[in-house]
Image (cartoon, rainbow, N blue to C red; front, side):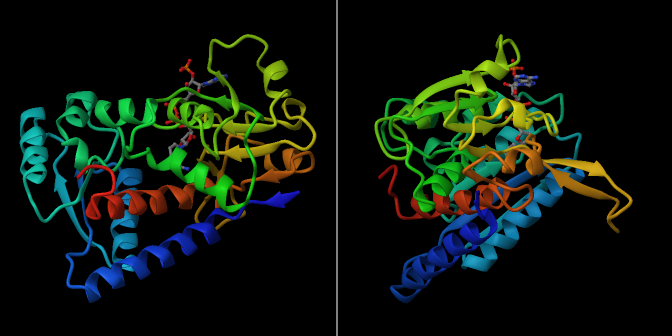
Length: 293
Ligand code: NDP
């Protein structure tokens, strides 16, 4: 079994980005600038936004965080998005999800101008990705593709089973694995909560990508010998063995499944670190006008 080291891969990607930024700086070109909007004080969202901002600084990007109170109205948030859309200094804009219940997530996403939508959630980017035009690819599936590519895991002709059909992970993942490129060119089965005989399907997977949000859902009995297993799930579970009082686990029972897998991602240190690295890559692409010009 080979452990897919997402932490190390993400660090390598950040080094490559920092080298690009240095070249831009040396050539007198404006460095990439990522803006984030955070509404409310959800601790997990604060942690994500802080680590995105820290990663920007590590690679030499500019970053700005707009923190708005929980009771911000939808109109006020949309005005903020439009303000940043029109700011020529900003290359990429992300709105940290989830938003408070009184705000329509999709309306906010639709308001971000597609060429700054580095999360790749705007319908224009989703549509472009679907038909194979240049597009921002959502950070988590993009991170999974990079892990497959950089570990030389061939996907062509393989049966890839994706567990979960969310708009941010499972659905784009299934489209990307079926597109005509490498990684890609897989025969894809997309499973969700209404899927019958789930175990029979997952056991056929050469590549199993799990994003269902259920801690330890996938056990060894659901996995074929020699499969590549990518665990996107991330959960805090209480423990008294750790000073923080919790430990992180994925959607896969790592210890059992690792005995059967040919490659597997750990949690933490697998897909998680790749998500931020991919967001930085998308922001670099935006600054270099590689997707839209
Ligand atoms: P969602 O809750 O949005 O989607 C979960 C999907 O799993 C749904 O499509 C759901 O089906 C399906 N599902 C749920 N239960 C079952 C079941 N028992 N059998 C089959 N399918 C099931 O989750 P996300 O995609 O946003 O996230 C998935 C996991 O990945 C979470 O643990 C999340 O924390 C993690 N995550 C990690 C990231 C990272 O950077 N590492 C980034 C984003 C997410 P249905 O559609 O029918 O309801």
